[in-house]
Length: 342
Image (cartoon, rainbow, N blue to C red; front, side, top):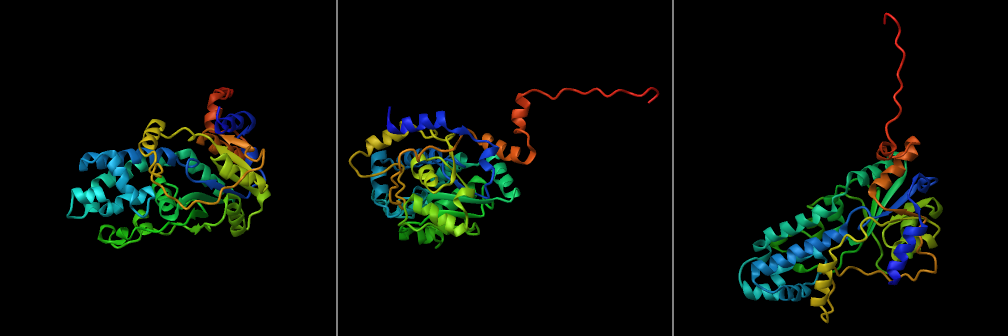
């Protein structure tokens, strides 16, 4: 069994199920975005399949040729790829004239729609965040996605306007083609956010490791570690540094196996030796955080989004989530006596 699988198994066995106790004494909640609030792993995988196979079919190039050409684009964040097609050598050779971004716009729309289908936040997630805010807690989103992709995910998932602030990675150098007529002269941020930049967002300094990033967020929010709950999916880069800082931690495992592993394996095999990554997401990479033994174990484990909402609901009412109450059966029926002549 791999070290990752051993950690996952230990988390499932040892961590306490997420409940109202996790929120006691907490005034700030720092929540990971990808694969915690929304299933970005699944979204990227399914959208990548749509984009690669669509380009191959419509251009009559092989998927390998498509992938080789996409590697030449300066900005490899997946959501930016459709805006750089004029610089794709294989496509440009096949179609020497015309605007390829415009020509393949229907495929871009299908790709983005596939992505959005899988990042839509369910009702329990939205209600959980709203309840935290109603209870007077500060809610902070944190993500390794670059700013443009973070804005796209937040807006497309239905989470816009819910966080007090989002902390995202810095956009990497952008392909100049994105600012040409195909994107109406707008930056990638403007393009992916559809011009709406109102979501409060702060860029994490790229030189910081995951623990230093958390320290930066705590300082910016004037939050005390002991009164802060960290909710995230990755035990090494999210949970371990939070534990080291004295934060309360909860690991979301619902989206852990949500990616299309067969497609992922096929793409990696096809790209072997090319120094490419899958999906093509060359993101700003923070320095690796080396966790001490035992730091990766969360205080709580979250298996479903309903569990999150149930904990927040219980804090307010002292009662379990309505679905849990229903599982226990209906309340006993009380028959009131009737008055004679009434």
